[in-house]
Length: 481
Image (cartoon, rainbow, N blue to C red; front, side):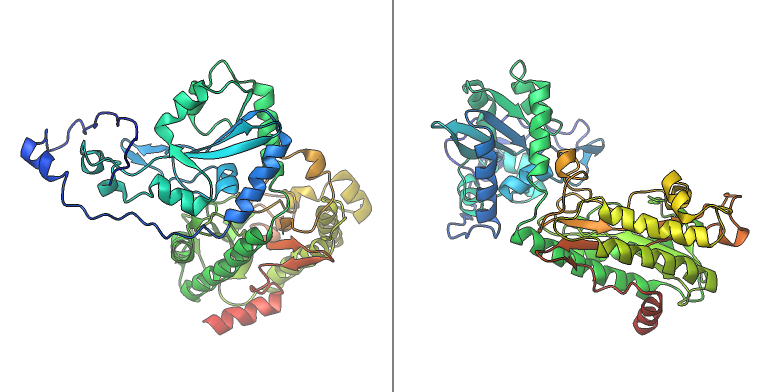
């Protein structure tokens, strides 16, 4: 279970109040022997290896002669000695395809303009000193890790023991750029060599690399949407038509699908029933979905390669919309249709937002909510935003709000390009305590959200497997039940 030539392992740390103390010489000797060789020598590269190599080359070309350091991150404590489930930084995943904790990608300057990419990773647990079974992060506790040679085959790049990283960084003389905020130890090792402005620009550039998705990423997002649709179907099947359904049951039901087909949910599931649907990010999920209520379900499966869907449907719990619920729902549907129609290559990124919001303003005005003001004036003054609140969408990919740190002129102020993926998610939210609207509107919240791929000649709805039109939603509910 060990790899030869690795640095010395730190002393084993025991729990302060653990039940055992020390190890007999006989037991220690016994544990050193009798373990089968599990090294895998015939591994094929991971599916995205060719893509990650191209991405690293693109990054290398942008920073000739500089040492580039991109950490995966370290586990975060949840309670005492229990950590949150680890999720590596998206930039590290994008450039390596690796999902390891404590890992670091380093691009070392090589020649006049190129780099040598090296992944610094934790190797196999050490047998000789008992780390593999005595340390509570040894392999008998946390599970087998890939060896460095195995990871080289999988990732398609050189791998070194992460315990040599500090010394290797100290021996490098090139100017450094670090992706900050993920590994305090790496940042400390580079103390005195970092420049905050240079690192901030580096983060912006890394985020911008992900604006246009390649074929591997599109396939992952497509699968995420398909699995998400199956998760929504699971939820519909547990919704009670004549009894309350706990929001936590709804959340948990979708979570089962996310874990069955992917890594996790891509973000905290919003299972908002009744008036909870008017809270944009209702994740407490401690209420009940009652027959007659609307359920706003905003959820996405994150694939095993960490790409996430982001889909919302607003469903009549009892199976059919009331007349007023349908009126509001159809207005949001019209707005989404207008937004999706505006998604095409060459269009301004904001066009889909303006198209959807303008449609919502027209509906809200037609309902007499702004007195004698025209829809044009309402939209000009932004008065509709009292009921629409948020923007109409965002980029999607490894992060649910992908490329969030990219350059504004390339993102929201730039044009759409084929290969971009974004959400279109207009909504209307009438708060329970809003005295400016008729009482019957209060507590109604509706959002419809889909994941849209910009194609060479228009767009494709990746989440089209879920019905959107109100009559189709009702027929879908009836069929599943």
